[in-house]
Image (cartoon, rainbow, N blue to C red; front, side):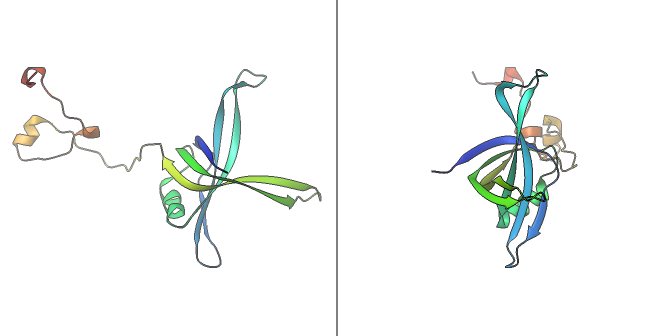
Length: 142
């Protein structure tokens, strides 16, 4: 079984393109910190993984992700070889993503109006910020 799960941050904005047959792709790189290894400076060791997504998932990644966003990626590790400009054969490891979960909250710039009992009685049904409503302890039935 070839399955890899990663959680990391985008190192730059994603790049979207389309194949010759019209299939949408999106490529981005994530930085993943190792849990326990430290480098000579005492900092954590970071690994970088190139990710490729396809079709609707590629469209969503290109639309909603940007540099610094945290994502969880589940996919297959794919190895390919190429010859660099010096004529040396190199191995490239890429992750073909099956799943990408956006872990950084979306900031759409829209200011959410906070729910309050006064606004509810005035007929304003604004959602509570984060889905929570302030409740007075004295009104609880237990």
